[in-house]
Length: 253
Ligand SMILES: NC(=O)c1ccc[n+]([C@@H]2O[C@H](COP(=O)([O-])OP(=O)(O)OC[C@H]3O[C@@H](n4cnc5c(N)ncnc54)[C@H](O)[C@@H]3O)[C@@H](O)[C@H]2O)c1
Image 1 (cartoon, rainbow, N blue to C red):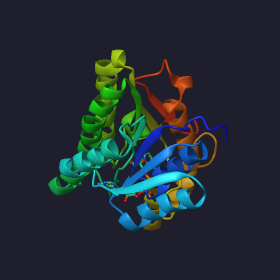
Image 2 (cartoon, rainbow, N blue to C red):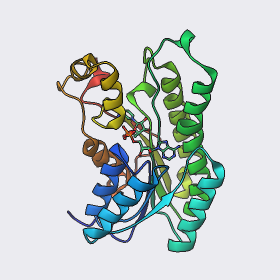
Image 3 (tube, rainbow, N blue to C red):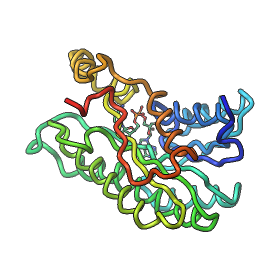
Image 4 (cartoon, protein in one colour):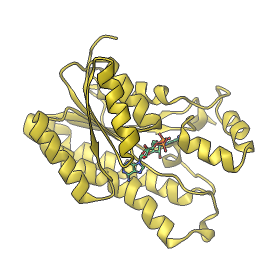
């Protein structure tokens, strides 16, 4: 632990579980002041409380990223409380039951796009003005390896994550000269509740998922957190607009 984020205010959406929770814990170990945000109030508050119990600094803010009024209220609270936001990890997302494209339903399409795409857009829409006021910042959005190619039986999810890259790259170009860096992480299969829900439906998925990664296993949430901290760090000062696969080599084959 080097305390490389000491004095920095960091927001993590979807921070109650999985990749978001691991990233909260990693930033806390590096001395950041955390804003943990999620729709899951009970678990999100528990994550923030655990950081505080270990001597760190964290608050929880309930927020459904698909609702602009929630995101606006969250950013107002952050501005009022801290007056700044140095790093934002826009990570809240939902998956889809697997099916071929023609078997999809309009309401499922809308709900995935509302959270995975509109949620990221809403967050950046309200985060960027605060970062502009303070002279810079770093944003990381969670995409997926499903944003980098075909994802059979997951076409709506894949489309939503391709859209996250469209938002990330466009905003990176728009705000590059304003010292705001905006990148995306693209995890392959990571051992979180999201993966366990899919594996519970079809137990063969665990073996299949391990085999699709050249390293022979699925990833852990803290391995994504490490990439997010790098992208938010000064070491990545010349890195913006990238889609970083963290995938055990899955996109090589
Ligand atoms: N687990 C994987 O294999 C995997 C792979 C690639 C990308 N991802 C992406 O990583 C991100 C995190 O996934 P995870 O595996 O940690 O999932 P998870 O289900 O374990 O955790 C997701 C968290 O997001 C929260 N959330 C859901 N909808 C929300 C909303 N509308 N507003 C605010 N919070 C909301 C949930 O309450 C939960 O705490 C997602 O964007 C997901 O698409 C996951």
